[in-house]
Image 1 (tube, rainbow, N blue to C red):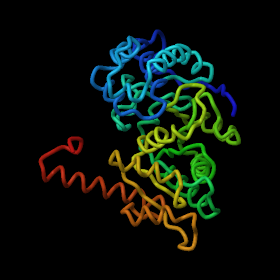
Image 2: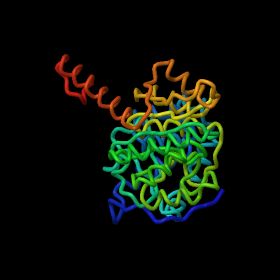
Image 3: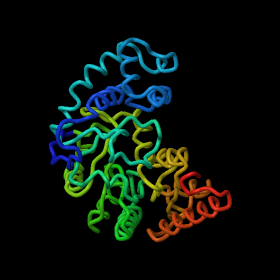
Length: 324
């Protein structure tokens, strides 16, 4: 696994950071929550990041949070977070937080603490129309071909491709979008300063040249199984919809689909040969009412239909679409 140095994203707020104290508090909270902790997220929502950080570092750990973090871990997180800004700057990254103007308003979950971001694209890419494309690492030729085609078709329609940097379907989707000169966002399962998997270091640098690389984990963090749920939430939360292109029965892509459903985002799946073990997971999703799609056009049509139904419901109840 390699440590990265790459060109930094354009800074929308040059000069002194008016949110420095809040950003430092959220950097500490990210250190503390390297996997989702609903109790900690609720504390931040209730009292704000600075008050939450002060409360925790002062030894006032609520009982529901205390079941997740020990006092010694709080102090270790505070010490480590003090160097995160410098570590991020060395690889051209910055910590984007909900208080920033460029924070993606549609990003879910609501209790998100922050996102480390690096790359040449403007931060507005995170708020642009986007689709999460994902699937098995052990992909077939059929799956990688379909993933690249979907990404290229969606790129031509102005959609950003969101995917992990993992082997198989996700990498194929990112390459398909890059080949079509479409915007890409790669979500890491490790710190923003790492290239993981190491074999995709060149792919990640290509993405950084025209898109963004994102992580909800602090600099220096290594991949770990217990962190995959948080990674899945980022992938699901950044996309308008999650499309599972190919997935075996126990594929990690099913966790991303589950995360999308938990936050009310559409889940779509591509059918494969009924004889293929590599498509058992996608067929299971379709049986469980994921939308069956066979092209990028199908994805866009399904989203348009969802928007139409939402508008009809809003009209019937006398609400705006945003109030639904």
